[in-house]
Length: 147
Image 1 (cartoon, rainbow, N blue to C red):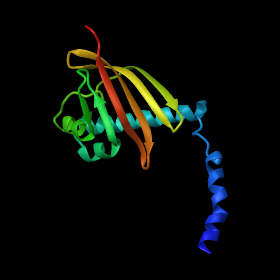
Image 2 (image 1 turned 45 degrees about the vertical axis):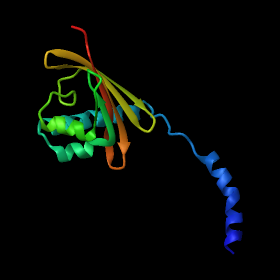
Image 3 (image 1 turned 90 degrees about the horizontal axis):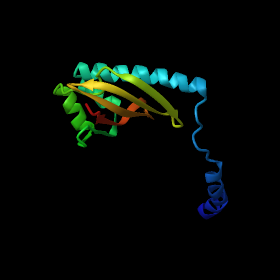
Image 4 (image 1 turned 120 degrees about the horizontal axis):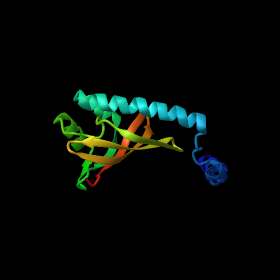
């Protein structure tokens, strides 16, 4: 009986991949709505960093999060949260200008900007992805600009 069931299901298994579709690129209205969500999400991260709220940050950074700083050092989620708790300057809560938002399927949003940190300006990029419970910061990178 079990063999018959498997034989009956086998042809369906070859068809299923053909039925799968790649994620759809959001239209303009959807993209604008996602950008507004990310603006709010970025505010939540900034408040958590400023307030040294490690519990909130743990839920806002993706588990596989990485940040590459201006010297090329790579921090994972735990190291980034430790830096926030130590009060280190971070792009997450620094004033930002020249913001650009790009929305991709998934949805995924890539944000670029410019921020002063200590005595330098940095150009940075942050990638936001959707997780099981909402938005997550997946990766960020900052480059120090020449003086």
